[in-house]
Length: 156
Length: 106
Image (tube, rainbow over all chains, first blue to last red; front, side, top):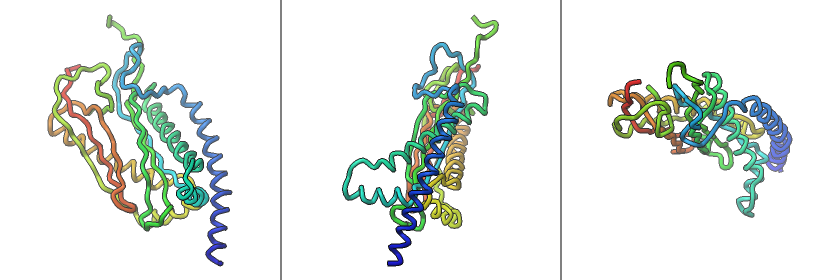
């Protein structure tokens, strides 16, 4: 009985706190994505031909996000019933957007205008105590930052 | 050393391929940090210590790869790829690999 009570409390806590944290994160992401919109990101491996670029450099952004107790329990039901697990979809999407934003931030901080050859990688973060259902996801975004060189003087 | 994840380096020409270079590291989390992560598992949110640990480990893997390229006398590493695998509970292997190349003189 006691255990059930604890589980129910954690479930509600995860639902309430987790949801508000997720909303705050999403709102923050919208804002930061708009701010960084000028740093163009592309999965193409070559810059547009109109872009004379110089000094390319590797940039990366990563983030590890934990799921909450609510998401963990809900997904357990889905493992039996199957179907779309919306609560985990939103978690991975958040992590992916955050990783790309961090990549753009690094590119801008180093004075670059865009990133080409974007690659995204997702992996699971596990807990060393081996608790089932606990953990989170890590997303890595990496690419090659390029700078618009502008019209070069003296060069044809 | 120039490192990119594209096959070509914009504005430079590759004159010679020296072969595949790679670097890797296996890391585990500090137990205290893991307990904090356990609390995060209830309410959700970013696992900052894991973010830093993985970024750190990836940097080390990249550095090892670059060191190997330097031994070969390379000017750059192109077509870099990262790979992450979870070896055991709480331990991850970060692997970086790419192709060491020689460039024309700028």
